[in-house]
Image (tube, rainbow over all chains, first blue to last red; front, side, top):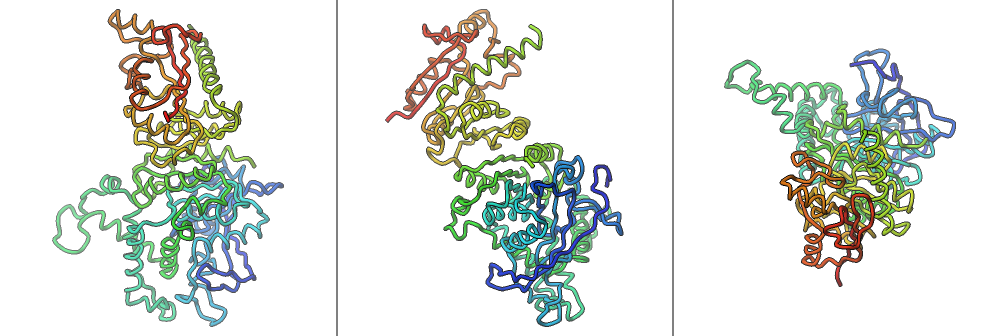
Amino acid sequence: MSSENSVGVVAPQRVGFDQPLWLKSGARLHGFELVFETYGTLNAERSNAVLVCHALSGSHHVAGRHADDPESVGWWDNLVGPGKPLDTRKFFVVGVNNLGGCYGSTGPLSINPETGKRYGADFPMVTVEDWVAAQARLADHLGVSTWAAVIGGSLGGMQALAWSIQYPERIRHAMVIASAPKLSAQNIAFNEVARQAIISDPDFHGGHYAEHGVVPTRGLRLARMVGHITYLSDSQMGEKFGRQLRHGEHKFSYDVDFEIESYLRHQGNKFASFFDANTYLMMTKALDYFDPAYEYEGNLAAALVRAKASFFVASFSTDWRFAPARSREIVFALLHNRLHVAYAEIECDAGHDSFLLDDPHYHALLRAYLENIAV
Amino acid sequence: MTEHERRAKAEQRERFDFAVIASWIPPGERVLDLGCGDGRLLRYLNETRDVAGYGVEIDKESVLGCIRNGVDVLQMDIECGLSGFEDNSFDHVVISQALQTMHTTERILGEMLRVAVEAVVSFPNFAYRTNRLAIAEGRMPVSEDLPYDWFDTPNVRFFTIADFEDLCARLGIEIRERLAFDDAGREVSDDPNLNGSLAFYRLGRKN
């Protein structure tokens, strides 16, 4: 990974909030902590702050690297840095690990103050709206009354959309990339397969696996494998792996024959070695529940009535998880409300994961839009 | 003509086109510009008429241009229809010298007058005098308003003022105003199908 235009060595910060947070589910969280990173400098007018929201498996570590691990490059490092499209010479960029995450923010791995044990499955279900409410507390803490922009891909894009609805006065630009206004039945179906893989793992123990000193690795591995298939496009998978054989011949066994099997197993193993199963379950549920139009009889335009932000919406041609048509639903709801919107449908072979890549045209669009944001 | 002169002339002509279109757009309107290129017309309408506009464009470099120009643009294929756009959601819909580049002419005209109260259409008149001369000499015309060689033209529909007005009649489209200009930018009133190089229409639905 090139260190050119990198924000360099970064260190996570931690902030605690004592005030309880009422969650959408009706549950209450007595205070919580968020882990976050910042890049660039907040200007005197406090008008240049940009919040980067992560997707299912992302974290607060958006850009740069940690001093103790040169390999630990941030997940959107190609976007954020001096001279990069989200230019840290202009913007003060904030990455945060969402509530319920497993990278240090309060979540299932945290100690429940009421029991003195890890929350595990007792951690209350959090939603996209809850994340946004928690992020608003972080904004208060940072002295940011209004974000210049909130940006995210996939589940991160849903947070940007939710910001525009929940805090219309606190967001000037919402950048919603490879996202959707709600999951389709097929999306939910894939999530349910992933959840069942985890829940049916004998090591899951109803979510209290930590107390048994085990981790439902097999379930988590399967969940990631299923998820990973939906992140890639058929054409890209075909191009990258095709029917290539691992051992050059058919083995007539259930070991790895085809390269794609090896790849999925590798992805599954890698993920299962560090990601928390309860967090994964909750993230998929947050995705399933997200539907701002739900309280408006399915009318997304009605849900966006209070929104004031200008929007950048982008989709990718080969993304079948959140296909371009899903982004167009958002665009037309914005149009109904006469909001500013730029919508780009980007030709890219990499499926849903395209939003993480540095496709030159995609980055040119982001750069152009971000350059026009006044600070 | 030097490149510089050519560009200056093109810009002058573009400003002229924009001025004609703007003269039909009352200030403060909501405008949809189909095939909006890099958003120049919308920017002009915004600056001169305080128009709130959206552009629709399929070409990716043009979409990027729009975003650079700070113009609200939707990257979509007009040939697939305007199904996501609500009825009468715009005051005017504009298609400026782009109708001849699209296949689904009838559908687009119908959709335009569904989503907007009025449509403004401009196109090069294939029956303009010099074009007729070129054809008479056995050559496809290349002119001020049809500036492409036959082998690299974006145009796919070649039609005349007379043809267009026939189609409007057939589709129940009311021609509320028409302006035609020769290749020097002079307005023509005598036999526009022969003397007009570029035609502008203000269209509405017949009651």
